[in-house]
Image (tube, rainbow, N blue to C red):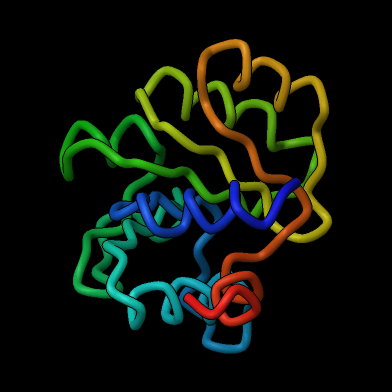
Length: 138
């Protein structure tokens, strides 16, 4: 993936549904969510086991669909789930009208990525925005 494409995504995206958010501060999903929030993104945590709680100034939702229904549209769905679980989240992102699907480091699902691209979404796989933002000087 070209740096310019990643730069364009990270500068256009404003609202992110972060699937797999953890309330545990030592977990990568927690740290990345806090980093993104600190950089001015609206981060909506998605974790069915934590639904109804408040984190990052937002309600935690059980699903992407629930997040969009209650918190409004999202530009990007970031996936902190195992690769074998990513496809269902990608399908939810497509259904929710997201513009971007971002699969975290180690999360790779080529078939789901192809479905997303065919639906008009941009796809980033096996990368972390908390690494890319400083690397690109954003």
